[in-house]
Image (cartoon, rainbow, N blue to C red; front, side, top):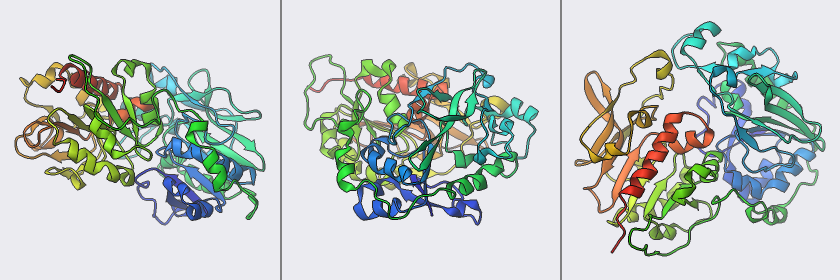
Length: 465
């Protein structure tokens, strides 16, 4: 039995009759429930998805470490910000300048990568068909597999994959008690299993490896009381992360900068964004959804609903966000992949596949900039709003669609719009996900959008009288 702890939408095709059927998706927040946690820790192996809440996982560090010590095997995906299993190393961003800087190389053989040609891990593309490595060098995007590395590896760790010319540790494994931890410092490893290439072996290899642990059922693990003691307070988060904003309105002094809050779920991109020194001048306040009080939003001037939020956690805050829209002194920014059509009044949504390779192929992805005389364009460059998106929005009448999708010669929906007429507050909604990509260290255009949004709300803020 293998459980895959996820923080949001399950992996596409998870229920296909293949190796994927061996992985059962479980909401990571189930760890906070005694009975659900006991079931999770009764598994033979665990996969921790890159979208899981790291602050949540830290609260259960002793339990997760105990699971491994008892013989369990765990695959850890993503960029570890706070070690939530004993021995985990913190991920570091690689300052890369080209595709060869992020090329993965085999360092030490590991059964999960048996039969894999590492060249097939270097590039990804959505262009239909099966492509040679030489073709992928022309049309593919490098960096999905990994764009960072780990130092301070635990004693006895084995580097499996190195990145770039110096073979910096990207993937590594280590023993902990009777079990083993395998770390992949990039997008979820299981998502790379593609039957068109040698990397199709990763999926079945991974399942076989996970099932090969020696965990002893019934061996004592850390109990609920241990998890409670091992709280986030005992493992301090990065600066500004994991601490909820104070409840109540703070009246700004004339000309004061706005109070900006970021709603997030403790994922690695959000934590890395909050800890980014480049954003320190904006004094972004952390609104960690599992612990914050929704009434805290009343004390903010600018509310940023971070992208890719856990829908269950977001639902608790949706009424407070809607209430904030009735305050003319507020600005509300809602970022992508948050199913706004289900909780934001007056907006519709249409799915469109993400085109992330257009800048490599020259393909026209349909993105168009509109209303060139709009004052918003003083703060946004074309590159900041045309890197990629996650579907089309259909805003209410009166909203200004600044970035749209053109299909068959007509605008079919908005990728970013501003609404200053359908509610007292100023509202900006987009299907782009800049916090995820900025925090992941991937796609410069995403960072530009995040910087642009912060410049805009700061420069145009009018303190309440």
